[in-house]
Amino acid sequence: MSAKGSSAENLRIVDQLRTPRAREYDLACGDGRLTVNVQALDAGEVGWRVEIRGKRVGGETLTTVESGATRVDALRAASREWQEAARPRGLDLFDWAIVEKLLGDVRAL
Image (cartoon, rainbow, N blue to C red; front, side, top):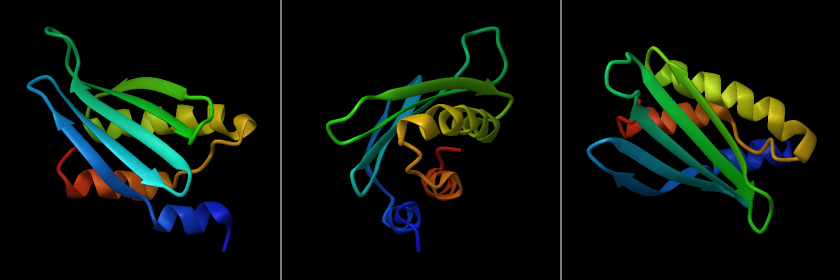
């Protein structure tokens, strides 16, 4: 099993913050940290915005922001951007299917 695979199995939500406007979830696995912020688009706009910030402990932070018609669409778009930007930096640590499942389990999506 790859390092990514074994770390992904340990992926868990370690903190949650809910405000009237947004929900933010901190996830961790191995030495990887990920924050996912989910919020509705500004008034007058239809859809959702997801911001993903992540890093290895003590390393550089990578941030991607995307929007979509649904929360799931926005997460998937942001995770695609994340993967493209993360690979050259060695930050492709997260199994996005597991991230989506964890967030779905707590009704973030």
